[in-house]
Length: 125
Image (cartoon, rainbow, N blue to C red; front, side):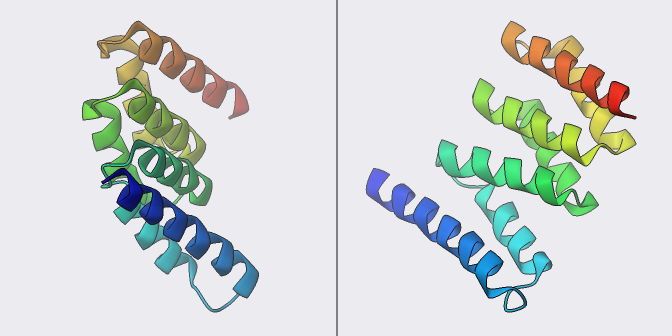
């Protein structure tokens, strides 16, 4: 099972790098859709990487799936990577979700980092 997850991660990274190298062969919508699929993976590394890159693309299509991970992700790492991505997207809805996790997450670490991401976003605006 671990070998399969590593292969999936490698395939996604290969797809992303080939999309960058190919230029116009892969649209940003296709890359975003693949990253959204990566969010549903059982592989923690793939899931957190997909969240990070969705934040880089910053489209509104990824806000709801990232908010779901931020609220109910099983690990701190998942929730933190979703908070980073939502902070990078910087929409009202995304920032509100990060602000709420800063108050109500069960993990002190997640609360602290969400507060930091939220405050940095406010300073950047």
